[in-house]
Amino acid sequence: GCILTGCILTGCNGNTPAERNDLIPQPAHKIPSGLKIQDMAGRPHDLDSILGQGQSVALVFWQTWCKPCLREMPELARVDRQYSPRIRFYGIVSGTDEDVDDAKVKSLVERLGVGYPQVRDRDLRLSRGFKIDGTPTIVILGPGRSVLYRGHQLPDNWAVFTKRDG
Image (cartoon, rainbow, N blue to C red; front, side, top):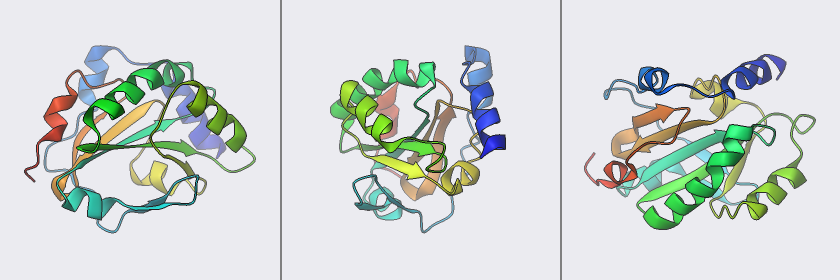
C-alpha cells in the first residue's frame, strides 16, 4: 500500500491541460472481461452487463485526503444526476482497512451530496488493473469494454460518453 499511496500522493497535486491529453488512451485500448465489483453497501455490480446494455461506466479513483478529489466531487455528483443511467458512476477508494477509514468515506460522500456507489479497493486489484498512478483519476469505459477517457481532470464534455454504439 505504501508504494501506491506515494504515487497517489504525487498524482493528487493535479495536472496541466497539456499533461491531461497524454493520459487519453488509444481508442483500441480495452479492459478484460469479467469485471465485477461490490460497493460499500454490499451490492454487487457486473460492469460487463452494464456495458453490454450500451451504458458507459465512470470509475472515479479518489482518496479522503486528496483535496482535488474532494473539490471535484460535487461536480461529479451533478454529472451523475444529469447523465444517469446512460453513464454509471462508481467511486473507487483504494487501500487496506488500516489505510482507509470507511466511516470517513461515507461521511464525505454524504456531506458532498454524492449519490453514486462507493467501492473499496482493499487489495488494489482495480488500481493495479487500471494502472492508477494518482488521484483523482477518472476512467470512463464504453460499450465493448473500451477505455473512452482516462485523466486526472474532469472531461470537458460528458455527453460524448452517452453514445450507445460499441
